[in-house]
Image 1 (cartoon, helix red, strand yellow):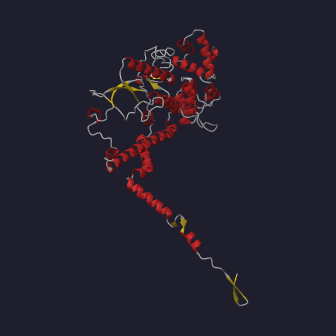
Image 2 (tube, rainbow, N blue to C red):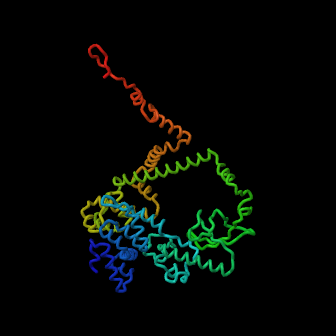
Image 3 (spheres, rainbow, N blue to C red):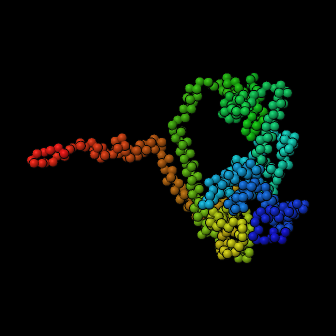
Length: 454
């Protein structure tokens, strides 16, 4: 496997080489020691062999970056396709896939599930015998630490299908237990509408969860949706119950509407202004980061020992976060194929900037905190406070109109509409109306001393 030390080896060639060693019974940690790589690197590169055909094809064509492929390959086939389609939405030869950071956020929000919220027992291997227990499952981040080395939460499930199957199995178990114990219960949902497959469920508007002393009308509620599906709760459905619904409860919708109107106009306006101010502040923060990124090339250090600079840069760019940040800041796109050759053509000063930018990209992602970018900019001599003030001024310009009181905004809008309609009647210009209103006078010509109609 000496070719593993080639500088132009592709990720797939590397993955296949590791697989050949694995088939001989060599463990990832042993392979890592042989090739001077981390065990996590070996495990993640090996996982590329699990890419579904559609994703692999795009990766082989250099359409999908390595960082994206390493994120997607950790998922199950259905979730791979879902993430791939999202990342490549509107992709063509003139565009790029969505950013690596956005892809990670999508996977976190749309695919990963928090096992800590699940009602079923994570240690129970009998719940779904084919899946086994969650505690020693390779799709749980806390168990497969080398594959999910960048995820700090230990109880994240990367397989929604298995998670949902266990939820359903647990729900049926609880139902059977309650029926066996002859306990009266009702299915409850955390949403505003009933699921189609649970027509007898009641919505959260029809009950109150009992946290203290139960009343005489207390009953068991079985949650049939959400991340806590299968949870038993003690609930009260009696809307006349003063302990859990309040003594002033009324069914009259007019009373409810009156309660909604209790907020004064001043309170509503204050809340609106606070919301606009938050949006403006966020916009200013985004502008600050954007301007820092634009100014970084002039501030990055240019002095470093030239020895092995290309190899250092190449090693750093193995990290998807570094590659993504270097591309954003310095506009360099190396790809994986013959990257070292391209780097060797760069000047020493350019290589140093690539290294610093790459390390900064890794640090930002590892800390999950973009304040790192602000701090580094200050260290490099940028006047960050000045940039932040200027960004806030710029943002304020865009939010000036929204910060005005609603009444003043409406008056401004009416004035603009009046100005646009000035000189018009029903949308028709006055001049045009005058021309239209002129009588069609017929011309007369003089012939032999007489006026004759033409």
